Length: 146
Image (cartoon, rainbow, N blue to C red; front, side, top):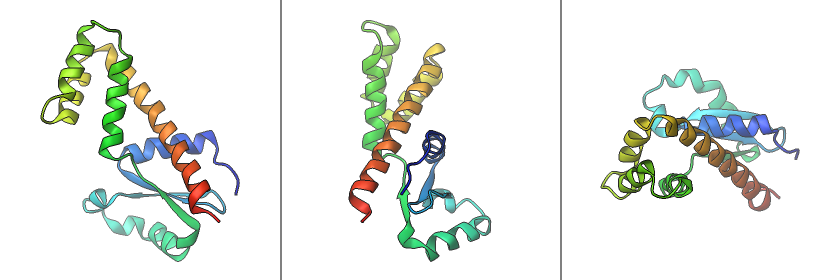
């Protein structure tokens, strides 16, 4: 098994963040991205038939990498907020958003209207997603192959 390239890891991070599931062929490092079940309902599944067939026919060679669960995603938002300078308006606003009834929606609203912090959030989240994918790959190599 050869290691995935940094470009492949970034591609996985970007694509699973959009709601796709990565199917990684551990023998040849081929990546197949299929919509998650929620996205599949809204897509023409015919477009994915060939890839679905490939994964099904070689099921043992493919391992899945899915987007982080809501707990992990919430942790990303907390970590970002924790790194902001103390006593800043944006930090207070984001902490309040995370403690509201719908923290994901509230955080998104506040970050989308935060000017310069919006791009900082996207850069931070992208880095967290790359780390998450690397950890997922390490886990697969350690526990799911052999």
